[in-house]
Length: 377
Image (cartoon, rainbow, N blue to C red; front, side, top):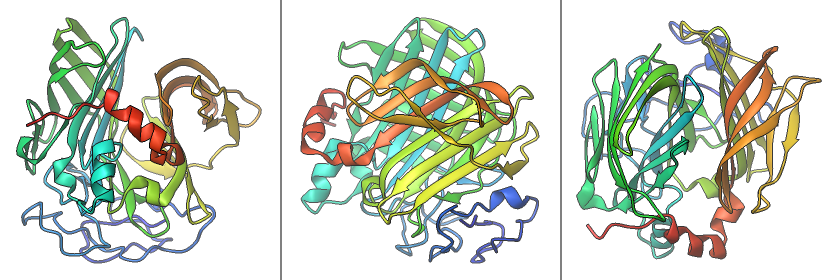
């Protein structure tokens, strides 16, 4: 797959030519599909203009700018989605957190129902998903409509919660209600990137789905009033965006990120696509932010969940991987902590498995509102 250099408007990168200031790791070709997707030009809205103006249904505006950080006013196409993802573990491993700010919430049952009715407005389906792990566990994902969404290039507001970027720090103000037991989650999370990346990568053959690691390594500070929590640790920030529902392009995917001994980060994507091909992507980010492609190691099966969700990961040859904790266990999605082996060393990895066939099933769509309430305003 080809990366897009936002500093050269309209010019897709050659597969064998590094971008300015980058290296060969920024161009990752699908290991089983050499076809370059169409519409590989510069995304609209990357510089100037109003974030909600869409000029092309193939090229996609980015949720970030390489070297600059998140961009919260990027346009989202009808039926599309845009999210920013953060995870972190405390230094003592007693606590963990994930946050996903979503415009066009791709796992929303309400958005799926609206699309079936012919209403494909992504800006009417937004949420901040907050999950606390460890000694204090809470989970929230309240969906909100257009009237609760405010955004410009550096700030995103979804109801009472917000994300803001000042060039060096991502500040997340949380004010949400957990489910199924209604309890407040209120406080501040700050993420300080070690370096700012942001080069996008295609995840599918048509170029309709992209992912960009913004901060492969970061320090995260968590200061919550409700529940009372104070901790800091290593974190990660990325963004995904697409012009169609995830389930249209993918059947299943696995993703993981692991902190390395030298402070670098390894990221793996392994996606089974509906076009019959697979996207197998492995990247190594060193502490200075330089990125290189790594050979994707062999696949290893992991134990299925109570919902019979399949799980698997990539692990160095002649090494093993094991699940040390299952953080999320749903009919179509799992999030786990793994003890595994990558790039010649033992690592702890955040890992997710997503089955889009299951997500599309009517019985799953019926269950989701119990975990994802929708605010009236």
